[in-house]
Image (cartoon, rainbow, N blue to C red):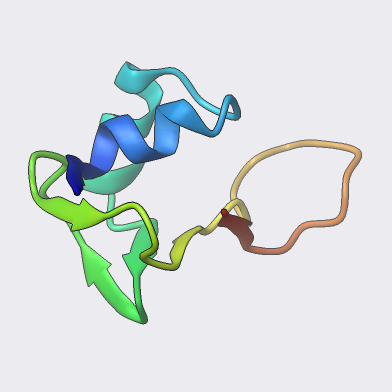
Length: 68
């Protein structure tokens, strides 16, 4: 089964769907190693989705996050 990329990201609970769209359009999301800029693209739920959080200001470790 495939889902829109913004939905896959928001289903993780880490970001809202609108935040996910913004991240994708900014080029900060990769799927299976490929940078994706279209939040409407569909991918299988098993795809390896990574969000680059390096520009966020958090107290957590500044590294990419993998969404399982």
